Image (cartoon, rainbow, N blue to C red; front, top):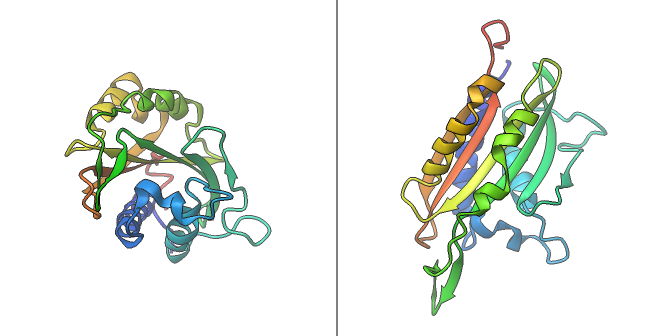
Amino acid sequence: MLLSYSSLADELLKSLEDFDAKIAPQGLYAAEEHVPESTHQKWRLEWDQCLTPCLQALGAVCIANGRFGYNWRMNKRPGTAMAGFGLPQKEHITLDMIKISKIKVRVYGDSHRIDPHLDFSKRWEEYQLASHLKRYQPDKTHQNMLLLVGFDGHKDPLRKELLQLREDRNWEHFGWTLSTRSWPDPHRRGFNTLAALWIPTLTDNDQP
């Protein structure tokens, strides 16, 4: 059975929400703390223990050397990584993964809360998502997907930034469809999490 991109997006985003609650007390916000200090790779835990199992359950396949995500490599930009997998209807999917936090969580006595004196809103601009969506727009032979996880003190996380991004770079024009999912931090630290996945827009002829 062939898997639609929209179904893939729904399942991946749900799996991230479930995984966020599972890895207490850090959650997705500081998942790299579960990885040995010698690496502290962003996205390594999420890829190995959340995204890969979800993709395998959905029928995704290895694409080289019998390894899932064989082309894993850390990007030089903090909070970013890249991996690959295959789907029955497409030979190769490249998944770019980005984490952006507008907040800083600190320890206050026995609890973890947002530091109200720090604001990292400018981090959004540093990742230049508009340029990324244009540069890696999907084509017929090699499909790309972009996964964003963001942390924000607002109830509707990164809403303003996504609206501005859509105004600056109409992603539908470049062949993208956006799926999103958001939820309050399950570890009660006072922020909300957004998971957003840009997937290729398919025509009727392309649908599996």
